[in-house]
Image (cartoon, rainbow, N blue to C red; front, side, top):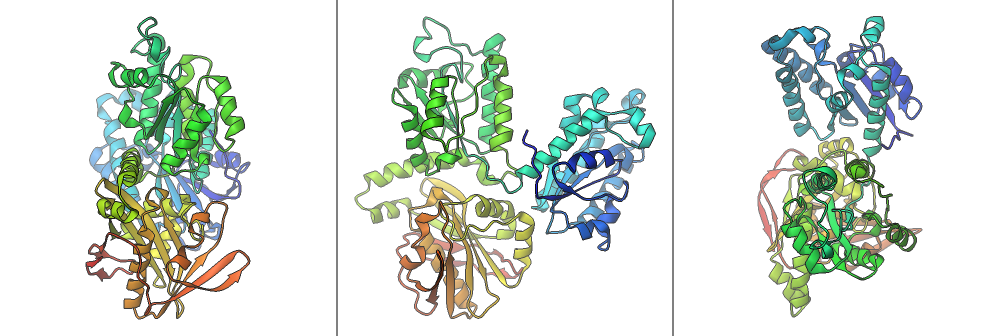
Length: 567
């Protein structure tokens, strides 16, 4: 598990003694010097506390449920105490901070004899239900999986009565190390760009044996012995796919043999529909990976390649150094554990969005769009057949997706500025900012929320500070429709001109001429950076073919925005 908190200011607050753990964390991060323990709500709610003077970027709250309940396991009383805690915490939330709140693990020595008198699952459920609701309502709240960590270690290994009696130190030494590693791992997730594609070999990788020889030598894939190791690997990968990891097949094989096995073997967990792209042939695998990257419109640095054969791994490492190539375990029983490590190291995200859960479907639809484009008589005919609809949606209701777009988009990103969820919450409340967010749909389905524009209106002339769009909808002139929509909205506010900024990076070359092509005039240049301007009274004709609409919702200022149609 990656452990990196360098350069980040974090705080650890608790109702039990965490001083030793805080000292551990100081080796890898700048950590708040807690004022004792048991007053976590007090330091949060007091604006004059040393906690607020420290200004942590991320705050971890590890709460022992039994201490919070004062060892009273009555369900009704527990509901009241839990509700009071969350109500106070919610009032103390600061938009400039990200919070991780532990889920509950109920433990105390007397529970060994409590039997049915203590509904442990019910009490933990009260906390979990309230925590889930909090995360749903606040984009800067995350869950710290404390319960799973304790369950994985076992109570005898996790808790220490000796330490508890000595100084209200609940966790034993090894458990404190585990919790420190977990906290630092969560810190590392904030702001990083995860990988997007897991490219997989088939024979002796997803199953044991060879697809083309299964009539002579049975495939190793079952519910027992070595076959279960491969099936459990597939179960892990399926959960990764459901969380937005795109799967691709890169296999030297007879296509018919491999696809027949994938679709019909009774113990296959992964089926063809789970893969966003497939290359099953006898050609070089570096060429297959390059083709898949072009098909998905993703950079090769978004790929992780997993193959049992060392010569294939060497080929990719030497020929495509942008691709991440982990080692392959030597024993089948290590497969699932190795893939779990790959997930945590390369793919895990701090939060999941609705778009993450629909990734494979969206990229499969993109393949159908490509087929339509090839068959269309002209590009304009293709766009008309797509029947594109771009809808402005409420940014406040999609804050996690907005954060993901701004922090993970590289190709269609005019300025490549990065913003945390807490900073975006402040932007939405800022009267001098306009945040526009867009969903794109067409005849093949919903692409999800894929584009965002942030404009600063503090001066006489609004400035587009950020304009990002997912690579999966590039190349359909959607950006032209979005620009027209933003310009129209600002013109209705009374502005006469608008400016746009382009700051070049290693990856955003595709949008270098976006403003010039949209009719803007370059008015200045600072090194490689360029500033463009347009009169809102002279908006040129744009080549967007589709329907642009705004649903009735609340905008960033909290006022009603009437429904509008733009074509």
